[in-house]
Amino acid sequence: MRSLRLKYVARLVPGQAPNSESVEPLVAGFPFLQGNAEFGVESPTPRLQCVSPSKRAAAGDVLISVRAPVGALNIADQVYGIGRGLCAVRAEKCEPRFLWWWLHSQVVNLNSVATGSTYASVTAEDLATLPFPDIPRLLQRRIADFLDMETGRIDKVRAARGRMKALLKLKRERVIERLVEAGNQQEVPLKHLVDAVTVGIVVTPAAWYVEDGGVPALRGINIKPGRIDARDLAQISHEGHVVHRKSRLRSGDLVVVRTGQAGATAAVPPEYDGANCVDLVIVRPGRSLVPRFAEYLLNSSYAKRRVAEFSVGSIQSHFNVAAMKAMPVPRKSVPEQRRIVAEIDRAVEPIDEVIRLIQYQDELLAERRQSLIAAAVTGRVDVPTAQRANLP
Image (cartoon, rainbow, N blue to C red; front, side):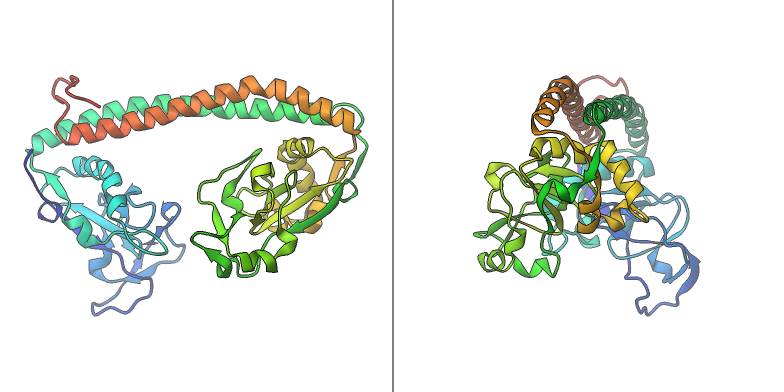
């Protein structure tokens, strides 16, 4: 298939820094959008901002995040001022909906050319040189119609499975809550059942980060309810590890997220014995508290409810060492805790297996969706008859 550069069929409008100086006259009265390194396109700022005429997105423009994750797309529903981290792509000599789908197919390519030490990013010039399929606009419309229909079907299936997964997670929470609360409900502050409650590195932790050869340092993004996610695991220097002795972890410690997914708790497995952590609450169970029981307890809706009742304001803003120490928890004997843990394990295992299967199937559907888009915009699908033709 022949191709030509994107700049020949679309106009690219790179964003400007908010309140930056411009040689053009500034025009007031437009909501302002910026790219966000985590969420793609931020919601408009509450107040209107002055923008240069050449830094405005028109209704129907494709807004693309040029910072990580590169390729997060939105369609402008009105005129916006656009800021750093965004680029508006305006169809001029191509079908707008085909342009939207084609940009979706370029996410992998865009991330492969993204550069930058803090946030990966691409420039408007990088986008301008992308090879755009040179096909008639009538065929572009057919491809867009085909993708609207087929991806809509996939999205409906994924949405239904998402609802099913949410219900299964709710059922899992109810099972754990029922077993944790069963029997004697005498409550004591958590501090009476633990040896220590402290916090990880909170003062300029980035000053101690190293690329390699350091000590693993768990952060909030690594802590999921009941497990440690090793992706994006940071390391701190050995010097920093020595300086921050109180935040060293032991196998069996509980690490609790303070911000973000506040309250998510995981027991430290043997492979992270001796590691360090950043901005996490560290709970060191005493002899009267079984780590696995505490993990189930702190991840349960029971604990979330108790923290909400005990804390003033939101959980996230007050989820600190003092609140953790004072949190009331059911007092149970060690044998009873172990029995409850075994019963919870048996009860949630089939639920977890179904959730894992749904997650795996959702990943396959997401791959299928992306492959379908890539195949359609590159002509590997006979769109007029929607027949399979070398479809991956």
